[in-house]
Picture: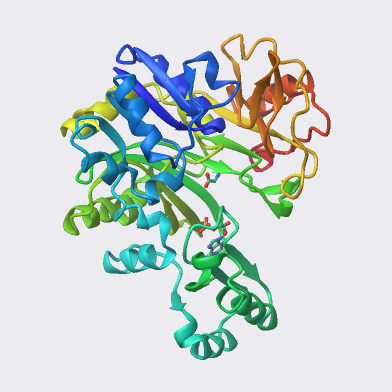
Length: 427
Ligand code: AMP
Ligand code: GLY
C-alpha cells in the first residue's frame, strides 16, 4: 500500500516509524513532515489543510491510505472530502467524519454527547453573547476553582482555570465580548474543576467496535514540579502504575463502550483514533475531553509499546474486522522527554543547528523523534517550540527516563531546555 501521512510533529515521526515496519506499507509520503520523517518516506511540501493539493498528490502517487495526524484537517472535514470525491472514495481514510470530529472541535458538542450517553464528566453550562448576563450570574455562584473553555479549536490555549470569581468574569468577558479566540470563543463552556490525576487512553474505533491501543500520562507544564505555563506536552510515560486492570475495566465500561455505542446510535461515521482525556478522581474515571487523533507526545510512548501492526489495524478498521484483531504490547515501560526551544511556550527563535543527532535509534533502546526540525543545507535545524522527543524503553519508568536524559545530554542546540523530572511520581 502507498500511504500518505499528514502532519509534521513528533507524533508523525513516531507514526511513520511504526507504519514503515508493516509489510503492508510499500511507500510512505508525509505532508509536510520534518527532518526525522524524511528517513522513513518522502516529505511533501503541502499544508495539512490544503485539500486540493492533497487530492492531487493522492492521485499522482496512487495513495491507498490516508492517515491524519493533527486535528485541523479532521475538523475541517477531510474524511467527507474524500468520501464525496469519486476519484478519492476508494482510499482508506483513518479519520472521523466532520460531524463526529465535533467531539474534539466543539466542547459544547462533546459535553452534550457525554450527557446523552451518561458518561461521567464535570458538571457544566454553556453560554454565548445571547445569555451573557445569565453566564455572569452562573459564575458568581460557582464553586472555585472555575474552568472556562472556548468552545472551538484554540491551538491548545482555549482552557483557562481560575481561582477567583473576579478572574472568571474577566476571562468570560475576554472570550465572549472581546473574542479572545475569535469564533472559537463565541461560545464558552463553564465547568466544575475535577481534582485528580490525568491520564490519556487511546483507542481505534470503526464506529461499532474498538480496540484500546495504549495509554499514557503526559506532563503539560513547562517547569519542573509541574509549575509554570502550559505547553503541548513536555514528556510522557507509559504504562501508568495506577492504570491496573480494574481501573481500565471501569474506563471501558463507563467511558469507552458508551462512547462507541453513542457513535453507532447517532450514526456518527468514525474510522480512526479516539483519545480519551481522563481524570482519575479518587479511583473513579471522569472524561475531561475527547480528541479525534493521537496525542503528542503520547504517541511517542504509545507506538513503541504497541506490538501489533498498525497498518493492519487501520485496514481492519476499514473492512469491519477490527473486533477480531489481537492487540499486544511490549512489557517494558516507555518514557519520552521533550527538548524545547528557549522561551517556549512563549516566543522562541528557530533555525538553530542541532548537534549530536548522528544516530536517531540507539541500541534499540532509545529513539530520537523529531518534533520541530527541518533540513537546511544538509544539516538539521530547529523549526518549532518542541524540537525533539527522546523516547527510551526501561524496566521501570525511572530507568526509561534516565536513559532518555542521557541521550539528551549528548544533543544540543542553542537555548535547548528539557524537564529533568518527567515521571517523578513513579520513582
Ligand atoms: P482540554 O483542552 O479540555 O484538554 O483542557 C486542557 C487541560 O485543562 C486538561 O488537560 C486539564 O489539565 C485541564 N482541565 C480541563 N478541564 C478540567 C476540569 N474540569 N477540571 C480540572 N482540570 C481540567
Ligand atoms: N499532549 C496533548 C495533546 O496532544 O493534546
